[in-house]
Length: 388
Ligand SMILES: *Cc1c(COP(=O)(O)O)cnc(C)c1O
Image (cartoon, rainbow, N blue to C red; front, side, top):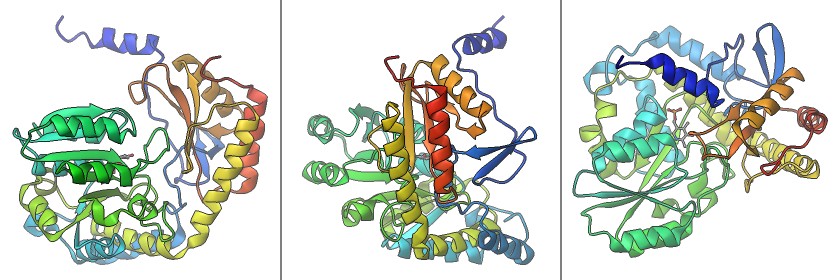
């Protein structure tokens, strides 16, 4: 039989790589309700605790009352409503750029930008650990595709020097999604400037979280004027959904004309844009959210390393515990579930072979006592490290 799907599924199961969605019976927050039980949630990307914030929810409800639910069309037909325009202007101001453009998801933003900027005569250079959507965007663009060693500007420079492509675009995550470490943006910008390349940063996990006002990696690292393309998502720290690209007037105009994932899709509901305007304001003004997060990160790192767990080189709310084998990661996740903690195991191909991990994420929605409870549970389930 040509389509022997059952065999492929069975193989996936044997490898401990079978994935299935959990059915959550409540909103995203500190507590996750699942199959009649409440768990402390340590695996969402709702870093600032805004996904179910009462003011953000009220803004959404009010906007649904004024604007309805569906936008009814793509931005270029008649789906671009006032809240979309207001949010684009607010995001441009927030990120210190001439303009910003909304996309329905971060995945689509990355595909759209890279396809609009690159073609056959061009080349794209990607960090090995870039998010799947950046890798897919690079491949889909038809440009020559090169990967360089993780966080290694020298490796990037070697590739750039050998390239005679018309346009050269280097692309990195600002904060790497499965490791939590940050790209060395100033060093990468140096290499790009010296080699006539543009730099694009996907700051899905930095926007809202890094920098005093939540403006992300480019501000916390002081390189905003040296990065030509900034992509940010709204479904993580901002707590809503969708994504944006920010940059020069010419960049945004190019995306409007040529980014197919912008042109040929329905605009996000205006109520999502309106809710995001509120969450953006809250993320700018409510510094306590970032301060609390930083305190929880420090507390978790100190406690987990004392217990002998292998942490990664991360100062962000992404604090993975490196386990190694898929089966061990699944077992630890299950043992913690038993004790009332929801932390999914992340396995290949999302992470490299032999680097399965528990991707612990912290949120301003957590309390200090929650982190202490997690540490106590980790103590009880025993220490497993990558070489165990
Ligand atoms: C989540 C994520 C995306 C995709 O964003 P969505 O809005 O969820 O589609 C892109 N890049 C990175 C680094 C991400 O973590």
